[in-house]
Image (cartoon, rainbow, N blue to C red; front, side, top):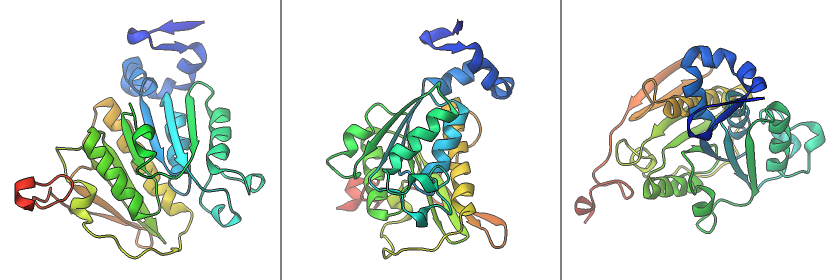
Amino acid sequence: MTFHCRDNIMFSHEELERYNRQIMLFGTEGQKSLKKAKVCIAGAGGLGCPVALYLSAAGIGNLRIADYDIVDRTNLNRQVLHWETDIGNHKVSSVKEKLKLLNPHIKVETFHLKIDDSTVHDLVEDVDIIVDAMDNYDTRYLLNRIAHEKGIPLIHGAIRGFDGQTFTIIPGKSACFNCIFPTSPPEEIFPVVGVTPGIIAMIQCNEAIKYLLGKGKLLTDRLFIWNGLASEAEYLYVSRRQDCIICGNKDHQK
């Protein structure tokens, strides 16, 4: 049996039971907002796995996940949806298998592809939010540009060692990724302890849920910086740059 809500969103008895503690917090209308949402997760690795796990558990109705890599044993200390038996498989296939076991009430689309200019437009078509779970700056700059062009909120996350960072971008209203990072650092294979992406990913999920519910204060114009060794967090307050090549004043750039 199913119960109907407005906008043709329906909840089964199983869903109402599953989401009971959330419905106590923000009602069936809030849960409906999560169920009808579509979120693109760019990356299925250290950040992407816990992001996908918790958004799925929260009942985000439509997840679109893209990654080009295959599972390697060196991934297993932090990429929590990939297990020993998944080594050699596409990461997106591994993630989809686990998510459907966790929550059969959601739709999970996966794409084994490289996110570049030829794929990104179709990938983010009609999504409500993009979650940056990447490990390289070139793709982050691309996601920032496409988010600005299409007016899609973007939630950035990055980690290294015991440290991490995250912030939320609302195109046209807040500082974008290029405002804060006008140039990229050198590429590297960086060390990381498994809990760090878990911590940053949880904050990214919290931002996504707040945005979809229209609740709370987003991490816009604030770079959240996590120092795991000190168990301390601080904020770097930022603002839009007039000379930003993505969102700045075009006359100022001339």
